[in-house]
Amino acid sequence: MRRKKTIAIIIIILALVLIMNPRSLEYFNTKLVNSKSDMVILKEIELPHSSQIAYEKFNNGVLQYWDGILYFHDMSGQQIWTLHLGVINPILKTSGNSIYVVDNNKKQITRVSKDGELVYKSIIERNIYDFSVNNSEYVLLHQIQENTPYRYLLLLNGEGKKTNEIVLSDVEIMKAKVDSSNQILIHTISTVNNKIENNLQQYDIKGKLLSLDSLEDKLLLDFYYESRGNLILVFEDGIKAVDKNKGIKWETKTEPIKIIHKQIGEYIALYNSDSKKSGIVYGKSPEKLKVINEGGSTLSESILKERPIGIDSNKNEIIYYSNRSLYIGNKKGEWTTEYKYNSDIEKAFIYPQKYVIVITKERLTFLKF
Image (cartoon, rainbow, N blue to C red):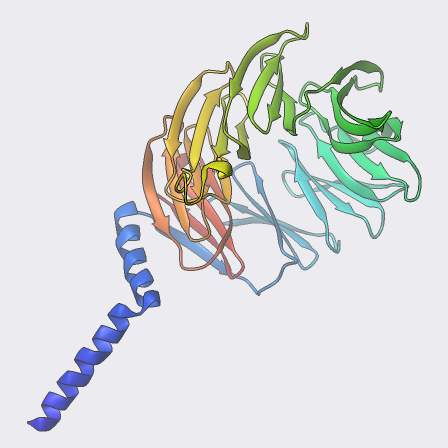
């Protein structure tokens, strides 16, 4: 009888230890939240702990570059194709129909079709610092000649042939891109007469300078042409749309922007946080997500539960994620799904038909909600 009582007491103590353990609490909380979210795991791919695995969202699936091989999985987890490239530490970017892989060890750029077929390999004279692609398959390569004041922007066509080169001197290129409008946009900073000049240069596809515009003395985060032909300038504290005649179509002010996500042709999602108002005096600053359409109208502004480390979207849904949680809603600011994760999230992508892909160091997970 005493033995039974002793065993019962031990069981109760163990149960209390399990319940009070933070890891156990996290597990139970995770199960509770996940059961409410109706998330279904379709497939999981276990991965080695490696920083050499690169991922990129591509159409209705995900690209994975691992150990010299490029994989493409669709949004349900099916492996569609693989291609051996043998590149070490690649830079990976995509257009609507192609994948581009830069290999600085060989000074080479490779274009792969959406079906996994090799289109071209082009040898480049200098190392590539960064590059931009558009849906017309133009590639703009940002190159730096070491120990010189020169910066090079090399333009390649869809066959990987050099079509133009823009050479700038005594400036630092902050960002350069070949836009969907087939215009080349270059944000530069330089020092003239002990003053910092902040400029946006625009060239046509033939390398002809179209305009050189001085920017406000603010941090420019992004710039691109939207579907109506207006130039969108995203500054740290707001967004401005400029028409072809340099007139301001619309302008909106925000708290400091931390993350920008564009759903081209639809809307812009901005994560804002005013760190100046945090602390003992003001209390914790709320994390906000503001969604505006291409006409500058605010579609929603919502308070977020956690500080996001990334945002993704499709035409109808928006997902933001913290280290251990996924939150899914819409552009109206209605957050309907919350999903707790038991390992650190590196990236998360959302697709049509309610598919989600989550990337951690341990696994690649395909979900549906």
